[in-house]
Length: 318
Picture: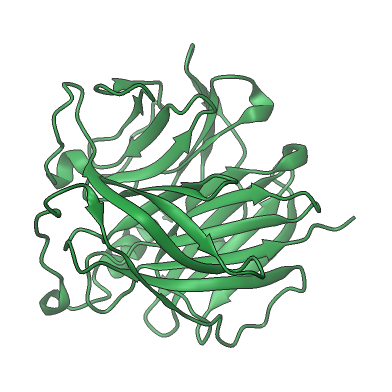
């Protein structure tokens, strides 16, 4: 029943904008560099939890390409370098701009290039092969990307060249409900990473040198689907959960747990707050003990949705 409910949820989400409102998927810019227009948005009315503070928001568009859409995960380094992937098989890079108060203010020096296949050739937007959902970057710069439909995880070497296949869970993933969450798992040792399944919220701990074993299942069935994850200091985790219904639209939750999956904190984003189909999260620990979260939304190439980049600062309990 849970899997059937998950499939219904995914179909509802994909159909939330009428077909006539779908944007045309076109070619990329002549070169990898593209201009990005970043329009500020407010947090909007939200109940809040007390320990999450809104730190800026943007709507991202580009006059140079029709492919800056469908962003499904991201990483941002402490020096502001941004890497994101799209479910149409593109890689987006850039730099975050902060205002004097440290709030999110813009994105600059942006590029958009296609992800490549095992032979080093562009995936070409073939949905069955290019539906990238999860992103994790090793300290040496190697990038891992999880794909659904053709369920697999590829590792792209930092030095360039085609990717190679790395271990992924041996599970019967549904066509459009696969390995949405992908994150390094530093507490499990070098070469370890967490893989999270969207519809059931199952997770696995995988290792480059071996394989995958079952992990914890975060949250509960009322919290929606698992779409992203990031490790936090002290063995804690941040999980991004998404729910949807026709009446209230998307509900997004940032769930903080300990290493066993026990809930430590929860932040809910729901209308009338600024919200969309958020699928990616990154977490940057800061010197004062707080964590800066960035969330990216997948607009499904729909004119009824937006590509939002939001920032939140979380202060854990002492």
